[in-house]
Image (cartoon, rainbow, N blue to C red; front, side, top):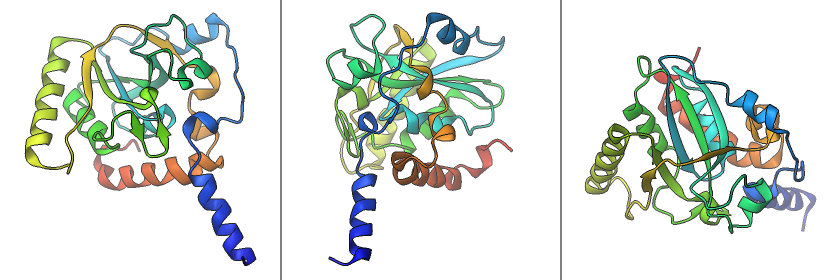
Length: 221
């Protein structure tokens, strides 16, 4: 095998890294105060959307670019264990999905627009999987906060299925929001702070670039 072939092989293997194996930071423990600072009271006039679409590093990197989005917080929802850690969630035993809470101004960007972006920036037809990230923690999910969000999500999903936009049926679960646990600090703004990390360079960056081309009119200046 030539040196060039070896290099290509190594790069390919790096690209196949999964979210749960790519942190490089190990398990970190944050005090409760730091998490409360991340989840400061939402500003007046802001709404919240909660989405699971695979690795939350990817989801965060997409939604934080949108006009009208004040902040995006990575965390865990949909499980049965109190205060789960990243390591526990990655084991697939807590029932949680990696999710992002999107704090947005509905006068600038609507929930319906967020749904459009949600469904167009991941594969909603693969059960408990996004690419090489496999497990229930990577499931496609909409955690609705009120009846309006529920209705919009259900109708959008039905229309997508009927349109044939995807070859396979959509498996996105649409379930009521219950609890949200903020992920460890090193997960917040992960792509922005770790852009050269292999998973970021080979998995997240191409997704973000594709998203920016498709939704250029909705991007922040």
